[in-house]
Image (tube, rainbow, N blue to C red; front, side, top):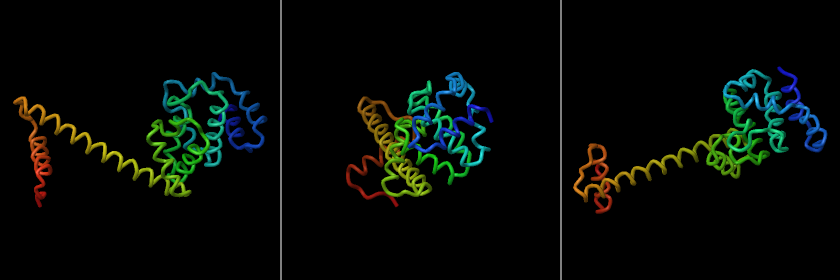
Length: 196
């Protein structure tokens, strides 16, 4: 473990009431270290998978505090917190779910820690229903699955409508599956009962 990583763990372990000392310690880390973490290699944070949980958690907290203070050169969807969290997800779900909940509660970056605003929104929705990190992770996954099903159904309806428009121009659908979906759509529109 490098000296900079030790400092980030210390910064993460500091009490929020001692913010001035925490940020002073964080400022001792050169920006070049953070730039090296943001380099092209995606395994920069693999060391987080082997650290004791408390150290991995505190390292992540330290990154969040540094980003919140404007010390990190990678904001938004390029956040180092996102890269670190990707490595943390190799740990047991009980651990990374706890870290994810802390990040969502304490990090103002709407992309963090998942790299997608929608995923964070799902976690925030789940966090309104429970405080248990595992339940939050499962509920957020359920919300994502429901969203994906709605999105797929909308895309399918759109493809069918496009084919109806082409059919009016005399262009027949090439795919037998698409023809079948068009027939099913017409049956639904006509109010026919679905086939058993």
